[in-house]
Amino acid sequence: MSLEMQKLYDERLGRYQATIALEPTDRIPIASGSCYLAEVYSGATNQEIIYDPDKWLQAEMAFIKDFPEIDTLRDNRVWAPLYDAVGCKTYKLPGRDLPPNQHFQFVEEEYMQADEYELLIQDPGLFMLNKFLPRVLGEYGSPDANRSHMAFLKAGMGQMMMNNIMRNRSLQLQTVCGMPQPTTGVFIAPFDVLGDVLRGLRGALMDTYRRPRQVLEACDVLVDVMVRFALSTADPLRRYPIFVPTHKACFMSPKQFDTFYWPSFKRVLEKLIAAGYTVRAYLEGDWKQHWHHFNELPQGKVLCDIDTQGDIFKAKADFGRQQAISGGIHDSTFILGTPAEVAERVHHLCETVGKGGGFIINGGCNIPYDTKPENFRAMIDTIMQYGWYDKNCKPVPKPPAAAASAPDDIARQYRITPWATRVKELGGVRGDEAMIQQPWDQLEAMAFNWLWTWTM
Image (cartoon, rainbow, N blue to C red; front, side):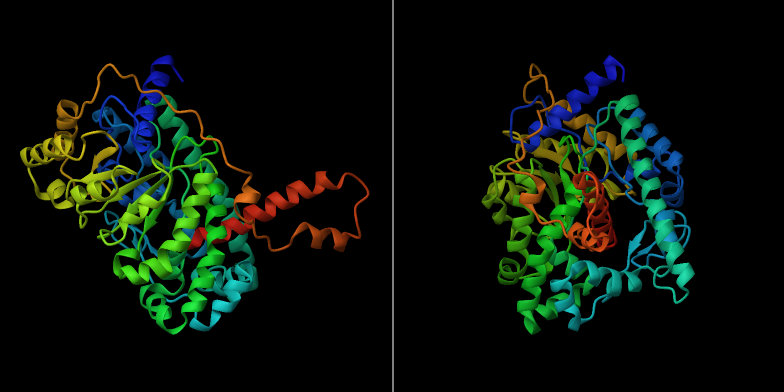
């Protein structure tokens, strides 16, 4: 990386990190977590973005060239060939199931039966292998054993290819454009594992009445599963927050949320914070009945994106002194409004919610595909005019936060075949056992964590 790009990268990252930490910085960052406009701005189709990594990267670089003021960039996270290799049923993809210019869609079904809670609770790995994945991954669930085995082989190879694509993208944006990521790594709240892709919203909410004990026990088990999945996908240098979308909380009453959603979600957040990470949480829908709970977490550790249905001013008043917030521009304003209307809104946000820091101006958890480029430019220009705190402040990256303890002490790592089982089968080993056990445990952990990719 050139000295110029290193300086630009450090400045952008430092500004972003300081805002999350509620610390002083020079200005309000321009740091959407999901800038979908960047995918299609240069003319690429949605199909090209998810099937052709080169066109995806070219689209992002073209976007950065025209909007160099932005501080982070993330949009697509789907590499479609991996989903094709396993026949994943939870997504409809542009160019395959949908028109090439349409956004991918999530397909919610009850992929777990109501009487399968005990298997999930007792052995989450076997539940995934024997129940969930054969239903969700059509190729793996094929009655043709050869086709099923090949699907898993292709899935492993596809995962490595996708990791290389994501790594190359990140390095290219960093070294060529001086551009940080807004998030690296992902998880979902334990209740959302149930409500999104296992039982579905209807099934999960009905279960809170019909089998509340099992719902709570399943959420308890999923705490460590989600923590280890998040850590396995997170930035090892701890520069970027871990991403968590929250999907079902907005459908829950405060009593339901306090009983079934928040306790396990809070434990995941606390464990990731103890591991030295921050978190970027999309508070999807209207969270106003629930977001006061973020005051219970350590200060400056969670950046909360407020959706279009939320009230950014109330969010600032309710917990904005404890955690950073992002949002404030309605999606409809980006799509249907005028540059003057965007500028007026941004100016107002700078003068109100932006006072004192800890704020990122953004859309409702994203910059929509249909955003008028001139409206995005108006947002940037207005921030560059009114969003300054102290131009003499020179943002620099923060040193990585120290982990409170080792990952094994923070969260249990489940394994399908523990080393103790394998060494017993071998009848012991004749050399250095630790040398054999370490890669065995590592691969077991990687394989187990990968199973949960398909709940995202």
